[in-house]
Length: 470
Image (cartoon, rainbow, N blue to C red):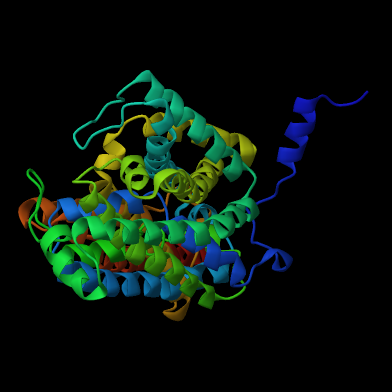
């Protein structure tokens, strides 16, 4: 008797193998083409329609913006290439499964749930960005800068429709996520640039020579909007570097770069950093200045580029949310190994869509991005040291797996104590959240090496005692 449609669909989805709990085999590994478009598409995305305007609102000066973006984005690319990519290529595993070997299943499960929820919130902000454009033809009220709660039933319905479509692409696996980004990116960056060029005459730019004067006087004026804090070169540089701290220093992009044939493919992130986190941030800042401070991405894009701008916002939200939901699904899947990946990803999409209903995710995106990167960063330091450094200094890698430990307390203490010290530095030394990632990373390294040395020496002494008894 033939299978029903739902049974055939279930069988088809079950057959999608993303190598969640094993190294990626050689025949599935990808070259430059598999990453250049994915990074460009993910980082020329919905966040850019939010971050660019928020820099304007925080009063960044034009000179500080340009140089802050150049230096910060170079540092971000180097972090992907020299920290995350070598670990991913060496292990060929997801962050989540590698962490299980290092930390033990109990600690890894705690971290993976936190990781997945953070990525759900990030993807939720991207769904909300797309929804600001989808809702335009239906006259749905858009959230404002001060809105925290859903603004209407229409807003909620729009968010869930967009969330469902994005989740379906993520369910299909990495190949489809990368393919979608490759197709969308070239068109999106053209719309960003074209829209910015189209509105420059409204701001008084009629020749190339006039741009810099207008940029300083009308766009990045150095004066923050009422109620917003003042940002400097250092804010821009550290934000550009650490906007994706969870992905590179935090090692979450092991889930993507495990498909790479060689570690140099980590330099593919440059397409995202300089097309997205440079050109697109500047372009969206120009758009918000021309829109007299409007903050909803759909509105500022539609006002400058019409229907093409609105469609660009929708697609831009998708290209970030797709790989983000994919990562979050892998994290949840490592906690629920009896669930198929597609079912976990569907659940992840539901959680993400619920989060997307709350506009505060978008309006506080700068602070949230800094926070989620900081929370995930210590475990990235743990993984880097364990995989790349421990074998060179005579210490054991994958210690929890080696001794059959459920909870590696040296890794757990590194995570918790690093975050406590970062909180102390923030509250009592006045260091803003944007700057905490750098000292936090070195704190985590020192803690993990010291605590692991104590732990491994103690186990070795216990083993020697047992051998002496026998």
